[in-house]
Amino acid sequence: MNEKTKKKILIIDDEEGFLETTGAWLEKTGYIVLTAPDGEKAIEVMKATSPDLIIVDMGMPVMNGYAFYQRVKDMPGYQDVPVIVTTARIEMRDVLEAEGVAAFLSKPFSLKVLSAQVESLLPDS
Figure 1 (cartoon, one colour):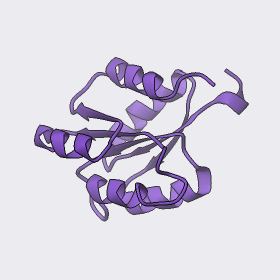
Figure 2 (cartoon, rainbow, N blue to C red):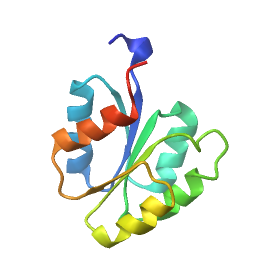
Figure 3 (cartoon, helix red, strand yellow):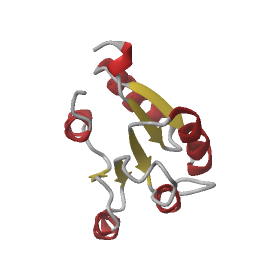
Figure 4 (spheres, rainbow, N blue to C red):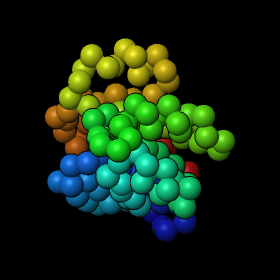
């Protein structure tokens, strides 16, 4: 995969270890990885980079994943960007799926499961 066809994935999570591990895994599989520790910083990163896919944790300080998702789905140009939600709160699944998230992964999950989800949402161009 050359640089022009690499897809950009934005990972938003306040756990630095999760960002590092997940980011390294996705980079190894051929994606450009961008990270943000909360929803507000993620909005700034999005405006500067236009990611192809977003992975967001629900429980974060400043702006949590749910508030971030509500904001993004109303932003012009971002309605079609798939969002994968990650959370340990399984009870959020029905609410988020009803609102249109592309996928829901309950923490902890394997990186192989995440990769399969990403690949299904970002087929090769």
